[in-house]
Amino acid sequence: MGFKKSLPAFILVMAPAVCLLLIAASILYGAKNISMDTVWDSIFAFDPESIDHQIIMSSRLPRVVGAMLIGAFLAVSGALMQGMTRNYLASPSIMGVSDGSVFAVTLFMVFIPNASSNMYIVSSLVGSAIGAAVVFGLAWLIPGGLSPVRLAILGTVIGTFLSGTAEALAAYFQISQSISFWYNARLHAMDPELIKLSIPFAIVGLFLAVVLSKSITLLSLGDETAKGLGVKTWLVKGLAMLAVVILTGVSVALAGKVAFVGLIVPHIARYLSGSDYRWIVPVSGVLGGMFLALCDILARFVNSPFETPVGVITSLIGVPFFLYLIKTRGGAQRA
Image 1 (cartoon, rainbow, N blue to C red):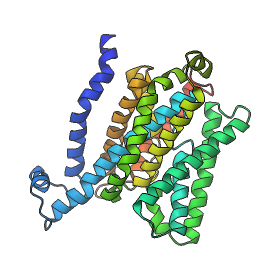
Image 2 (image 1 turned 90 degrees about the vertical axis):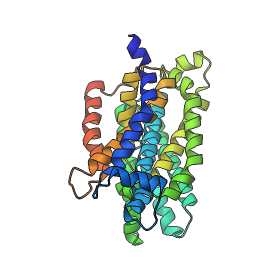
Image 3 (image 1 turned 30 degrees about the vertical axis):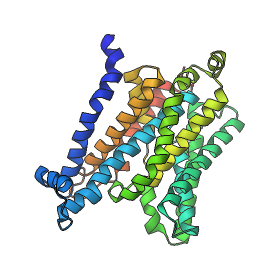
Image 4 (image 1 turned 135 degrees about the vertical axis):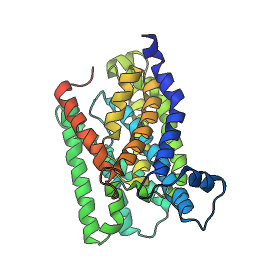
């Protein structure tokens, strides 16, 4: 029992070492393997004439850093959604939030093709808010719409509609090649400048998640219980959804839609951390970053020397996990 209580703290303490190992593995291995000496030289004695140094600093390092950030953002978003809705199937990719971002980015590329990177982040944030508003708004109107399975079905339907409409617009305006980045989660095309621009937004989202974590724990006990304990449920839910919109929007802007990270990782974090979201939120963030970075590394070896899209790896893990949750938990809300 003592080890179980100290496990979340142990995970957070060990996280930096594990992240460094994943960063090293991600830089060293790929279509072209690079030696550790070359990696060391590229960091401390960068030579702009060296192809290997260019690959490391402009591609592989931003790639693994971006993967860890995106995994952390999506996992924290999923944890917040599952806690405040008491819905074990809630996640950005299932509830239409990610698809709303992709839809908005597509509209942006069609009508404002020469916009700055900052504007892509803003459009993605707006899209994630629209996706969440449509799904949860319709769920409130439909009898039983907030039950886990029905909400998941509604989110899938709305998400499919938004992504299908986006693809149709991309094909009609002949920008399919440009917009494909946001559909296939191509981490190898990570833009270092976009990562820098996303940091302020991400800090706000993560700050909200941490500040709200105690209230999310009370919300996970049920609205009536939370109200009895003095929680302003609508305010907490509104701010939590704002955090979800920010973190998901930033994730989609960086690398497109990545499925199932926000579904799988919070369940693992909850199993390891217990029911207190003051632990679940940071542990979800740490595990989410590690999970997506590891999936990205595995994607390079599945069909070597060709790369498999990282979304294929997350789906191979996520779909069975999704079906397992439906089979074992049924249609009831989490108690």
